[in-house]
Length: 344
Image: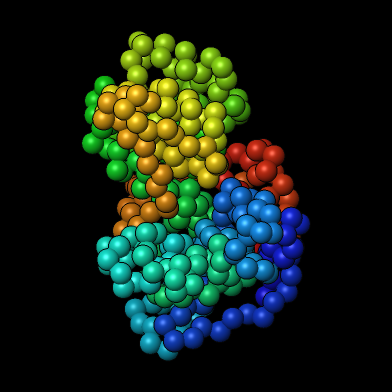
């Protein structure tokens, strides 16, 4: 089968031919219909050799959709040809977080060598994907896999981040979304679907600000030296209730820290190196900062239902497997509108 692999530290991914896997006990072989391209991939491919821990060669793609091709011994309840999404943050299935479906916070995955597809285990940018356990498959039904594959991360990650802050997003509240790209434009839709707050999008790209307006942001502000002034002008000088930072670099985390008000949340979702200083004299009273990771299996089901109801959708640009390296070049250059999707 064909697979897009990261094979050499610092080099572009390559399309290669590798053997098609056979499912063993408890495993499922999925014929891939779509695989999402993510900044997390770009992050790991930018790591120097002494910091890279994901193994080589690595078949990329932690956002996957496909149809059931074959099942291993002991697998029941699945139908050959059934359309599914792949839940990415695989865990042990036995610890307390896993018992709640929160495999993204598995306590034993690292010690057991369990890695997500595309982030240690072979990923979805191939003709076929071997899934370690049937519990990691979510029925897709009649939803378009190309339009829906990014729900597994670009939908699930902001949903998980937003859900924990919903009690603060009451009528009259304000949420700021920094970064209106692959995850941010979905976050805006989730906020509009689930909270009665005013949503202000912030980005350096006018094209992404246009996308933010198109998907429901009440206001869109250019991320420059005047961003704080413009946002506070929109709120009448009042600090905001929640800031969701989908970039995570020092300028954006610093902006988030200046914007948040008493009792507010700073939620750092982006994988950049930025940090937030928390303390009695550095943040407003009762303000908190957190850095969530991905989301639970049950939350992915909830995200799928939001999409099925037409409340959220992902803006996608499609690429073939042959065009995979180009997709990553476009992602790095910041010229992808929404989310890039590989279609084998």
